[in-house]
Length: 101
Length: 162
Image 1 (cartoon, chains in turn red, brown):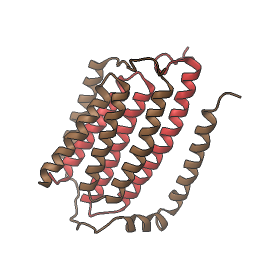
Image 2 (cartoon, chains in turn purple, brown):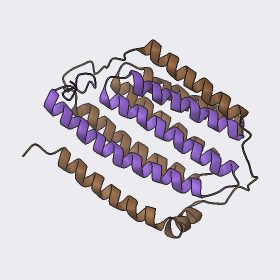
Image 3 (cartoon, one colour):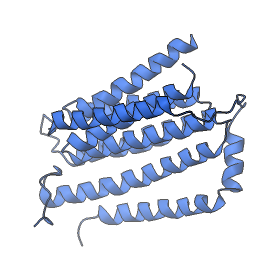
Image 4 (cartoon, one colour):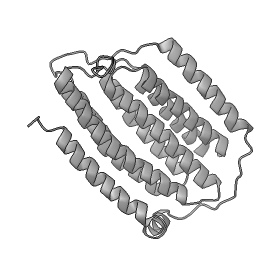
């Protein structure tokens, strides 16, 4: 149980699930949920390497900054999504293609 | 006992993460995301990161998840019973993602990771605070500016058009 490969594999599975959500989901909020999963898997990797690399606390700092980024990103992304909804009455990412030729 | 708790938490995390990306109802996905975040906080405890486990629960569950649920409520008519959403190209997506996962797991298991023994610290808050104030002071200050910019940007964007 307590070795590096276990944690890295869990993070890889979480990353793949998040990637699957980003690829297949068509609702912008569901895509955002997939991105949160990916960020969490990155954090898990940082902390696993911190613990098994001799408890180097820099990994914790990096994970903390990733959480800060995730908070800022979620706030701005949801503001954009709500704007898109007000303009198009949909948040299906395939229907929002005004810029496409 | 610790083993059992660990695998239970792993099962909870991965199972609810799968629910997040596979369930058709958006609100169910959001609730499953709650359990995923709790499971990851539990994994942080196993990784001796007590401070970050607390931060994970407070920021992700208390902040980001509430924002996401607000987003769901604001972008769907409350009266519409079925807040569902469709997925496309599931087969192709699953193929690509499973290939990616196979590559990642192969890489993880064949790389000789450099590892060092460590003793479990009594607490990590002091060390994290020391590093934030000494080695990572500039990124810490820049992060405060980023949060301010994100706050103002989100407020500007979500106002009614003037």
